[in-house]
Structure formats: structure tokens, C-alpha cells
Image (tube, rainbow, N blue to C red; front, side, top):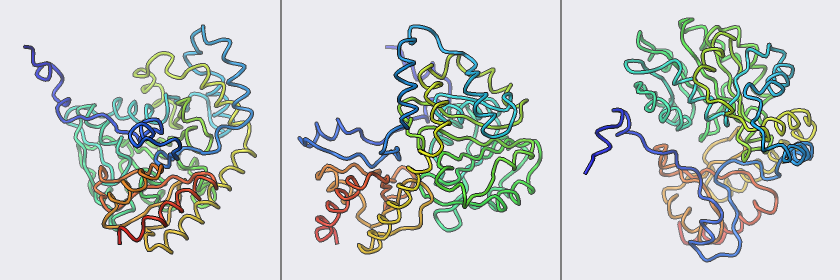
Length: 366
């Protein structure tokens, strides 16, 4: 019998697939429930904007044709939105693909990629897949990127640094001034990725991070999966130097962003008032959830994303009992955070169901 692991590239042995949050249908089957609420994947519970829905409907009749391989209209819209050149925009099948492309382009065997211990887990997976070596830097406070320690970890082998800001799953934030002082410490030939998947939830607090692009190796990645409500379309992007974008495009798969996703993203980008209103709804509910967690004695830390953190020594038991009641949280054991659950902010009704379920089980887990 052939041992295919022996035939695979060496880094395959240490790789494992990304494990997403449990889907509703799976929980309904497992528990025999007729209703469930998914609060595990930081999705926009309100759905996409009406303009994006209309664009999807209109685009459906053309799905027998391949999409624009260069996503010209989307790149032009993003360039105009950010006041950059179209050549500075990279698009991908979600920001996840953009992150993987960046690491694959600039890091390989013998190279090092620096990321935070509790940063987005895809940095580690993409580094391993590229055959590079991950350099894991612990958080100074257990939650927030230790930028000084990350700067000190740089050596001759370092090629890429990854920073999630706000961070998933911990929700912490570094503002633009702090990021600038971090960048000022670095060699100019390092690729620095600032992953801003949750940017729309902190735009005012963070500041204008696009102006940091004067740093030659900086890449800012964002997504339409969170605030814009297009997670199912899978469309993300990055802003960077045109020379970096051109190199990444050599690795990009043809037609990597579908025609539906391209047109929906352009329409969503033009519906700024709707996005801002939904972000305001989310922030109001996030505040309510964090206040409730404080009342229960489960509050972990302030979040800057569209999720909150619950902390308890029996977090796994809480997760199991929530699932029994039709609520899907995200356990954070894979992030070396076994005492934490990440709870996505849902609609008012969904959050009420979560809080009612949490109240019911509190006595049994104390």
C-alpha cells in the first residue's frame, strides 16, 4: 500500500485543515433541535445591503460566463474608495486567500514569519503550508499583540510579520500612532501585513491606517465578509505597493473572485449608509452583551470586533450546554485559550436567546 504522506511535501505532516465554526444544520442534526442560533463565525447577522442583494440577483443570469479575471471594476471601486491606484489593490477569495497568497509569495523554506500567539490562526497555517518557519510571540497581557516583542523577534531570516488589528479572536486594538512607531523600528525590506477584517467596527478609534502605506513593505488587508455581510460570497482585498501587488498576482489563481462576488462587493461599497447603520446596531448590541457578561461574572475583556469574549474555567461545559439549548459559540481552545468562548454579536432576538440560555445554565456551572 502506498504511503502518500511520504510522497507529499515535508510540511504536509504538520498541517491540519482550518476548522470553521459549527454550522446550524450540523447542530440541528446532532441535538434533534428545530431551531438554532449561530454565534460562532462573526458574520453580519443582518445580511448584505439591499444594493448588494439587487446586484447578486442581476448578476445571476450571467454565471455561465467566467468572471473578469482581473476584477477590474472592483479594483477600480476600491482604489477610488481608498484614493489609491488600481495597481495597489489585490483581490481574493476572501481575505483569507489574500493572506495565504502574501505569505506564499514572500516566505518559503528557511524563512521566518512572525505572528502573535493568539493572532488569527490562518497565519500559522499559511506559514506551514509555505514551508516557512513560524515565530510565535506571546502577548504581553495574554490578549494584545506585543509589538515591541515582535520587533525584537526580527532577524536576518524574517520575511513577513502578521498583525491582526483588531485581533481575532481577542478583540484587542492598536491605534495608528502605535502602529507607526512599530513600523519605524523595522527594516524597510520586511513585508508587514496588518489584517483589518474588522476595520469598519473601529474606524474612528483606529484612525486612518491607509496613510501608513508610505511604509514600503506594508500591506493592509480587509474583507467584505464582516460588516458588509457578504461572507458567503467570499471576497476580500489588500492595499499595498504596486510592485508587491504585481508579484502576488503571479501566484493568484485565475478567476479567483466570482462574478457574483465582484458585483455584490462593488454595490456594497456604494451603500455606505447601510453599512454604518448595521455597524452601529452591532456596537450597541456588543455593549449590551458585554454588560450582561459582567453581570454574570463572565466578562473577559473589551472587544473591538463584532464579537465578545466570555471567560470561565468551565468554558467547555458552558459551550456544550449552550449547544444543547440551540446556541453555537466558538470555543477558543485551538488558540491556547481553553477558558474562553468567542460569542458573535447577533440580532437583538438572537442575543436575547443567547442571554436567556446563559442565564438558565449559570447555576449548573458555578
